[in-house]
Length: 463
Image 1: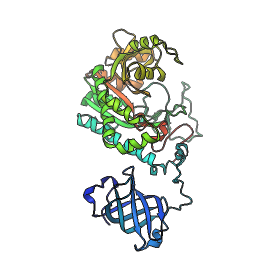
Image 2: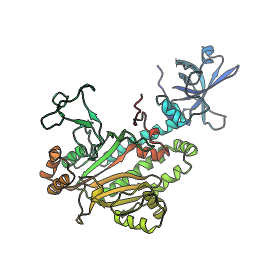
Image 3: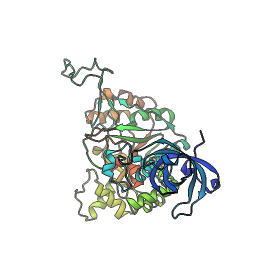
Image 4: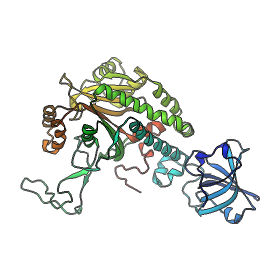
């Protein structure tokens, strides 16, 4: 079998050489003497034109090829005289791997709505749009690991099945091996008994790897996890998924200002990588979906992020006299409209909000000396609002126990987590970035279901 060359690897150095390409046909045009096949292998936005002479062996079968067919082409790479294409292939041999019945093939040249393409998520990667989206997604995932690995972070695989609710919000998928029609027997305390279940206790799909990765930060210093997380929130919106990926670094001997710098460097690294490696894909997405996409990404990479406290932000919003849909008052969570005003109108750049009211943040966040706020931070981007959320963690055992009691969270469920404060506690901090949120931002896609291969949302778990 010939060595395959990917379309992304084609260059002028290969002109005149015989190469082997494998991929799927996007379009087919036949004439009496030639067939013109446009082939794409997924490695680039642009396909390549294959010129198949009628004298080729097996041309009768080649002439019957239709869109979607999988083929191998061996031929000479030549410079193309055609407009809008650099190279083409003068085919010497074409092998047919798999035909595609043209009349039944769901992907037609006329184009399709994103809504329709979600119904055929197994085929949509073959389109220009989703080819671009998933190549960029791959680059972002690669950049995540390179950023942390180059800085000496250890990659930790945190569990998917857990007994801990990191967020304390209760939006959990429960995991059980018991038949759905089997009711759990009640114990003397009128609580379900789990002795017959696989783990002998209630367990859930993880909502975050943070608590687990904190344990490793308290041994290795700088660590991160990057994996799937699950939220059983019945939110059927363009911004929510039931299954998504989270990036969660955790850094020992790190306080809030250091965390802000890490988050800023991280985001700029991700965006810079996409701008450097995906000019063709980004140009396509900009043309099709977001006319300001590249300018927005370049602006963020070149901007100084503005750091401002939550209290200062509330004052700015109140003094703006803007007709916000949601009133601005100290102690309430800021809404997307407030975050966008700060980033787009007041500062004109990304904003890092710090020191949020304690009562609207999670139990594990470090309490500030004012007893009203915690050492939390959110990074806000223009157009979307919050992109990263993080904090310095509470490293004082007594304070953490007190906070658990205040929120009626069972201390016995967090015994191992409290041990991290009993034995050699250190200041440590971390943040979370929803991977699909950054993919959505970089690609300009309006619906988060269009940046993950097979979206899981309320009422839908197809494929």
